[in-house]
Image 1 (cartoon, rainbow, N blue to C red):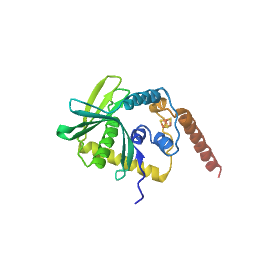
Image 2: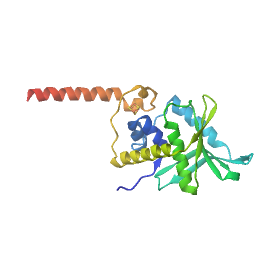
Image 3: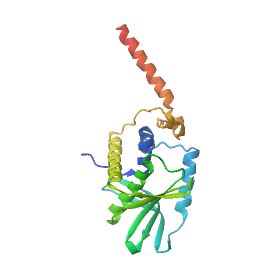
Image 4: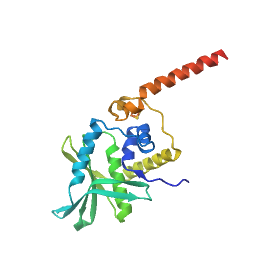
Length: 207
Ligand code: SF4
């Protein structure tokens, strides 16, 4: 058993997008902004900026920092809503795009819910995703399947961080949208390793 390192909630999304990207950002501290990340950052800054307020019995806290050592997570919530009449906390995450076919945004939201549960000793059964492109708010159930997927993912990322090994690139369509494309250069590395492989094959033939 190795000591768990606190990982940033954002690492979950990076890992699901590309394991190498996650390691470059969180292990090697490499970061480069592109249009997509700049737009996302501006959106989060705008959301985080507002002060706390209460409307219709719901308290809104913005830019809430969370630390959950048992879970191994740390991060910042865009918005935390609290409905005192039913003692219900609900994390809200703002996204620049639109709802995705996979669970990548839901996993991040679930990680936030798990952090609130550990910190406050409450049950968090729902969260919400707000999409800038569609201007729609989507309520998400924090159910058992999503919890399991999120916890498994946290454990996988902890293992990768513990190994301290950055995975090789897997070149694909997602590389076009990756802010680290110029640093990673996945096409070059793949070409380079193919040529080294061919060289090795020829050397073996010579033996
Ligand atoms: S360029 Fe591709 S392989 Fe490299 S980090 Fe980005 S998504 Fe991953």
